Length: 124
Image (cartoon, rainbow, N blue to C red; front, side, top):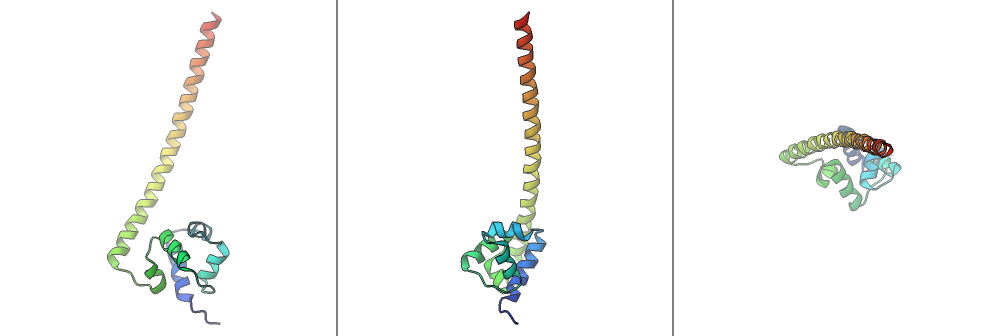
């Protein structure tokens, strides 16, 4: 059976894989079910304009690129840089969360020491 949406689905699949996203991650970002995304990628189903926009946003490409495979090379380079920056920012945020947790733990330890010292001086 020849499905009319095979090329669009292939582009979405390649984009998802190049972004190292799971089907679950992309489906969540595009606000669709994992099964519906699988059907789109396999060319079995078409999508609404809203879904197309959500997929394009999640994949950092234009809707035109998903539908036709055409995109201005400069725009593509810009989006790739943006995608890399976004990934780096996520790494930085993870590191900041780890540092924040360490600071919180240190503050709790310091607070416990203060309470312990206050209790010791009250007992004297």
